[in-house]
Image (cartoon, rainbow, N blue to C red; front, side, top):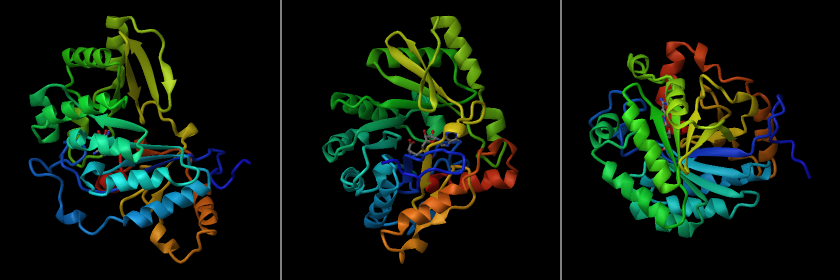
Length: 329
Ligand code: SAM
């Protein structure tokens, strides 16, 4: 039977929720936490803000009831949450939830991959902006490239096919693009370049932004890549047995087919990454489990047609940057 509680006023069915399980992170990526280097993101601002495991699972259950089928745990860094395996296992057991995925920076992945597999995790994305140790350190504030590479190797050994996400930054050289092509080819993986989103209060975005087309045109020239295939929000090119993809929320927005909701670590449901207001699920604590789908359905119906980030004011951008870890990337 077709569900209608998950369809907004533009006819978009929402089948995917991204859940930020913690605002805490063990890296301080320049574009995500500007000014935070060299210390890891502020722990003092992040205390006491996470909703509990039963609350998170309870809400995912309500989302499952309105037709959400896919859950992605993100953050902050989801692997710093000690009960992440229980969250995966709990989400897998929810009726209607068909896929449970996770996005990680990979720092703790080598030690956690087997437990995540046992918990039933279906798929992994690993964020890895550079294959060069010094550049990795400059971007993330940490000398952790070796650990991330070990995590990816471990995941591959366990049968995961992790997708690698790299934010496209101005200092990404053509040599490093070639290194990513080689890395994708050797490991039969997909590496996706993500357009930098303008979340920084200083001039970082202006100086660090790299047009995705620069990388795409370089690849087309050098590797004679055929036409791209669409995979969700990405455009992927097959090159030498690997895939190189592009995700550009600003220059190629995918709002028309957006199927995503976002649950923040503070327990607020957002209809868009760039929204300033959401539905505080804690206000629904009194609602019976049977009424939750209707509350969510009403909230969903008011989703905006486009994200509007290109015309956002500096104050809006500051707010989005501040909430990125809570809403989840
Ligand atoms: N810690 C996990 C990780 O690194 O994958 C999950 C959270 S992180 C916020 C999720 C993704 O958001 C990462 O791939 C990160 O590169 C991306 N991200 C963060 N800030 C961004 C920005 N300003 N523009 C584009 N992507 C960004």
